[in-house]
Image (cartoon, rainbow, N blue to C red; front, side, top):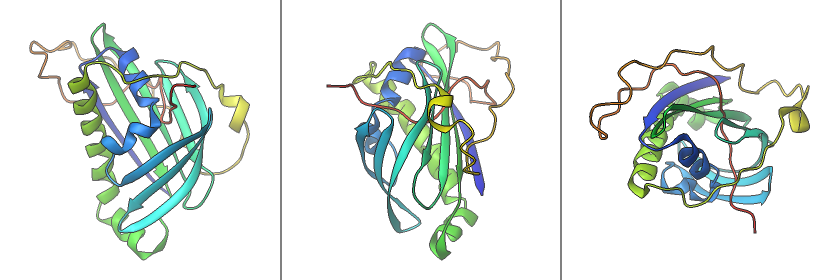
Length: 203
């Protein structure tokens, strides 16, 4: 099992960043290798992705979701992976987004991609592109403010590939907010208050 973590400081309010992340079907606009994401139910999505030249389609369930804090998910099919994206308010106009991903590479191509750090670089690039995407838009394209308690879906599931416990809280840099709205400081370790996974506005 491989694990990845990366953070980015974003020049929008935490509510705006969270709301945009809940728009799963917009992921292909800033996530490399994600061809499509379809919302099936409030807690179920269907993904089509390409990693290391290998195309995969899989269902994923949102295992926990709390507005402006976290979204967590796990795949229901092989290859197994799970994720957590957390959102941390820095001030009224800035926030930090942290993505934790745990996955189990399968096959020669995916193992090679793991060894070459391709997936790690992709995760970092995805967060940077998300930052550019939401800062350019200035506002979210939609948002779902529903809450999914952790125990509702995966309490004691025993799958063996869930993302581990969140990191201990870390102090926010005293340099925040940056003097220029275009120059946010580099993201370091982040407090654990959010998680990966999201949803579209309901009809």
